[in-house]
Length: 130
Image 1 (spheres, one colour):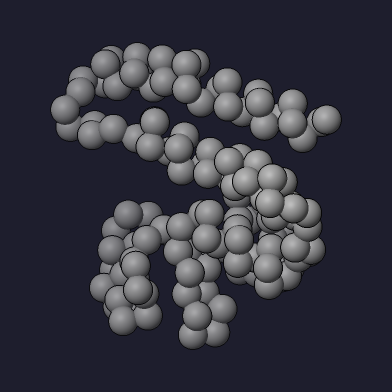
Image 2 (cartoon, rainbow, N blue to C red):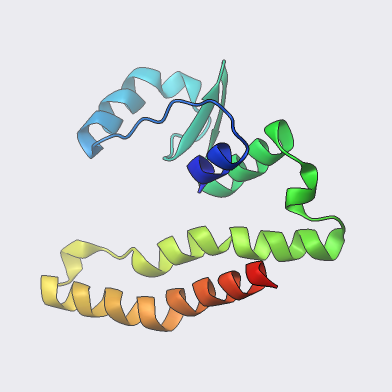
């Protein structure tokens, strides 16, 4: 999501993907730079912000039109509701893989996608086309 927002606002950026091992090494070497060492993160000079929603809010306020966050309190609440769908979907799909067989894990993901994630994406799409 932050990457799409940066592209939409035509902001130059460098995108870096980490394997888990690369992230753990990077985190250990740069831990003093992070208040919360989480992925994703955005680094601008010595400023670091982590997590998708705070990154999106920072990008909009720093580089974009603040109306992207809504023109009034109700608009902003609606935008927040849709933005917070991102971590909600992640929480719905993420489970402890060690406690489930591959078959159980796949069944759970399919069920959660159908019941909890896909309907939210449809609502976002409908709202965006209104």
